[in-house]
Image 1 (cartoon, rainbow, N blue to C red):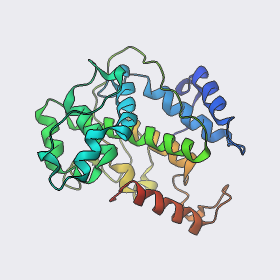
Image 2: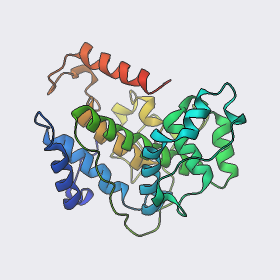
Image 3: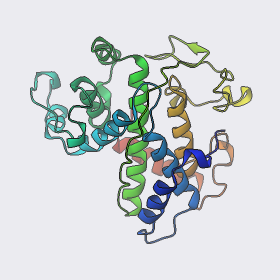
Image 4: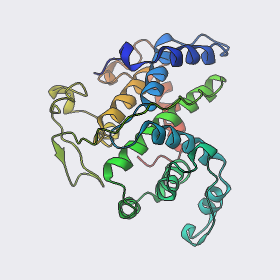
Length: 267
């Protein structure tokens, strides 16, 4: 399983995360703060398909979607695509992200059941690869996961980091398989270099599809594992789910199912 290392975690970001959690009425575990700091640090850096500035703006749009009147109107409409209008966007996004990716990010947040294969293909017609889509999805998943945790703890949302300059790597992992989902995913075997840290041959047989769904962009899986390990169940320990936790397995699953229902998670 991937480990959080010092070079993945900006010291300033870690300090700010600890300050945010200091507002909580109960103590917050250090590993939770470290996981949030690692994901925020990686958010600021160039990714696989998006620059650091674009990645931070995608996170900002994931938050802006929560209060977008156009998204509300579309979701309530019997025929969403007959509703015309413009998304309310975060000011930092202007001139950085184009309308198609803004619309997709807002859809990920407010009306995920409309993300069909046709919707993803429409995004490709606008010039974005399947990798662009998966990386954006991974960012949305990560920022919403952290934000919901902070809301539950009654602490401020973490400030978004300043982007780091540089170019995306534009690499694809292997071995990929087609036909199991809308998009290619890593096969159920140990990934090839340099992504062997994602999972070994044994764990690959039981790797959850919710993690494989992001595997076209391995760093998105690394973020997912880091947050899942700290906030939910450590990867590979589903049989010992209560280890290091104060909640029982039924309590954990009840909370998880309720959160999924509230988020319209059809998975």
